[in-house]
Image 1: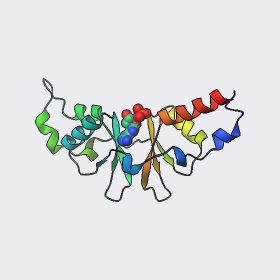
Image 2: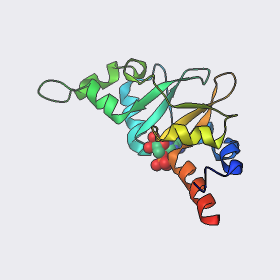
Image 3: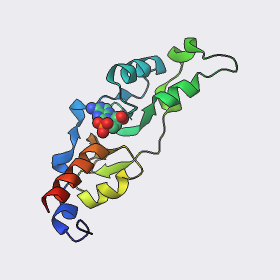
Length: 145
Ligand code: AMP
């Protein structure tokens, strides 16, 4: 109720909350699953964006998608990792938001997504917006009202 009555927070632009693309771990279309597994393991992130050569968003890749792709009947077939391309196993259903959108739109979308990929008007990837950042902003507001 406190929040729903406040237009300032809900109408706020998300620009300042974005983790910019240069700080975001990602893989590229054409990379193999072995490389993706290394990136996911080293960074500790559960899922990362898949981008094309022009930095346009193509999908999301998680550890679960990699594991499932090498699951055999009896054992995990690690030797197949280098033959699998990330674009063949990524999820194309990505939570996306435009960099010109409002906090309200982001709040709606992070209910079902741990993070949102942020794109500009040309659909170029500009960074991510995490649920953690949205909740922190909300907390700051709620505690100060
Ligand atoms: P956090 O709210 O920081 O726990 O992040 C939630 C999720 O957002 C992580 O598990 C990753 O999937 C993604 N994420 C957060 N920060 C980054 C980053 N710098 N690079 C890639 N993915 C990230």
